[in-house]
Amino acid sequence: QSALTQPASVSGSPGQSITISCTGTSSDVGGYNYVSWYQQHPGKAPKLMIYDVSKRPSGVSNRFSGSKSGNTASLTISGLQAEDEADYYCSSYTSSSTWVFGGGTKLTVL
Amino acid sequence: EVQLVESGGGLVQPGGSLRLSCAASGFTFSSYWMNWVRQAPGKGLEWVANIKQDGSEKYYVDSVKGRFTISRDNAKNSLYLQMNTLRAEDTAVYYCARGGIARPFDYWGQGTLVTVSS
Image (cartoon, rainbow over all chains, first blue to last red; front, side, top):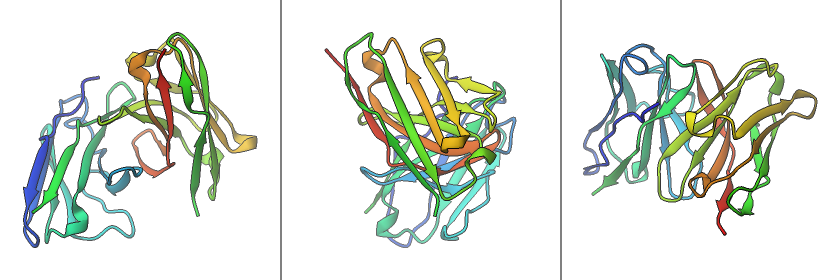
């Protein structure tokens, strides 16, 4: 049950696009289309942004998109806005019927 | 409106026990898998455990197996986490989250802080 691998930090200027990667194994990310992404602002509970690799819950901006290739999933945020500055976590269902999170990525909007 | 409200956190000595509760409202609690997810201070999220709608299936992260027990009372719309033999590394904010096998965590509570220290 090792954590998924995410970059510790990414940054971008308003209006730009950024991509956050999430690397796992064939027992989690690569084996299932059950990757989700969560946004967490300081002191707040996480919020679901993407599920089933690329689906957006109602109310989430279409600036957020997800994809997957092999054992690596990605979250792309286009048209960066100041309010996107937060921590982002990926998560995947696993072959052990459990869930695993990534270590988290701090997004800084310059 | 879906609401999840955790309670029961606090300061406990190493080796001690604590029982967390999560009160659910705004949805049919008995129709959903439920989870506990924790976050140590300044650290990332860690999935802890989940439980099937009728309580017949339960899964745990390796680090809590044999020490933590997840349970639910559908009549009371409540989720529980019994934590025994607590260690310093169990110190975290514990979140209750709705979600299940292959379903994302779509609603989260505000969390309850558990501190294990002498």
